[in-house]
View 1 (cartoon, rainbow, N blue to C red):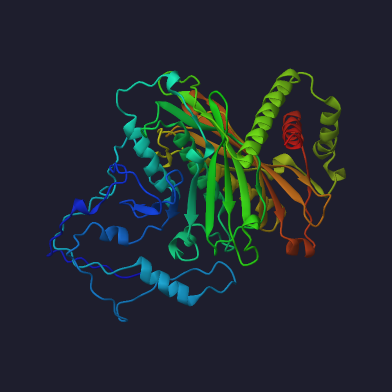
View 2 (view 1 turned 90 degrees about the vertical axis):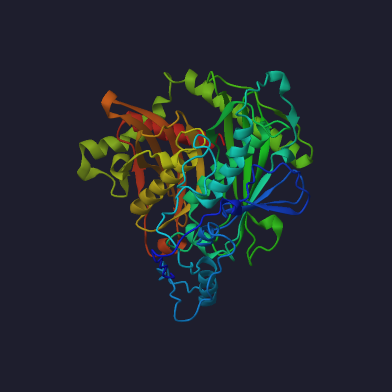
Length: 524
């Protein structure tokens, strides 16, 4: 990177007028008009008045340049002053040196000497009230979405009271939002989403999906004047998210979504991740990932369920999505009732069958199946203190952060279990039981719940991650979230003679967890 030198004998002037505020603008944006935030992590383009596009841009030194008056001219770079960052090669894939060169020129600049020793205000780019601005550790996409979403909160911060009679029905197009990831041209953005195998970091993508789903839910609930009623919208669950094809980090990516179904106080948002590559130029073949998020609304004062705007599907596809979501909602209620009814009358035969091999491991380990392993021997755990930088706009820990941490722990668990780098296939489901607050002691416990090895060429590894909020001073621990992921192993690893072992429970509690997950999978 370029060396920045700042002699103490030079003065420094800060010009706050260089920033332009998206939320302070009151004009109506026309078609094909582009607006840019003062924080150059995104730009919003309005191809039509109802569907903005958020384009993720990488943070760079140019953000620092906006702190200087326009009259300061940067000196021209010369070959003697250029030094490029050393990049770690994560794999054998050869990168394009010209792309690296152009990216380095794009993200770095020589800053002119500063005329004073006055320190730069680290929060100078944050103009939002601290109560409305979440933690700043997040990705460029979550920052961009929350900056756009915070304007709704600022408008609703007045004394105006909204009643249930003010609810209106909206079409899905009113909440539709898209995000573009310019991986092919933005080198720094690509580096933030690249894993050690030059593939997409699925944990960060899940984090962005949760942030986008939250923004869409708020867009659906806000009024025509742009304000949102004083409600809290929280993630209740995530249905199966299936990876339809591999996602590459070298090609541009787009996420789009809208509200597809609404109940009295809950709504479902469907998100699609699309990526066109050289192998799939057809738009119909570009869908790589589909996710369904369920959000519930709570009154900010009482904490009780709050009604939300209803939905009016217009197109045939919107009507089909509404029907599918309605069926999923009925199925969830039916399964919940069946589990409550059969809690004390479970299938004893299935439990006995699952526990039979586990008892052999415990009582006669020398006679146990060598191709099997106990669930408790596959466990991994991660503990952390929830920091304020990880909070959302409500002051609680961001659900997307929990999803990312759970995915990364599950991936590591599958890696250690299989003996080879696993391939992510799907998120089976995610349940949010209790909110996680700043300062909580969070323990993430992961285990391989069961495996499916009938297809030796593509074995399946089902990993469970349970999040516990632990309070040592109260000697209590409560389950806040449950995550279920499915992985497989690369075909080339299986050709080398790799074998995936069967996983068996040793206790009745473990057997019940396995049955519960199997039943949930069969119902989807």
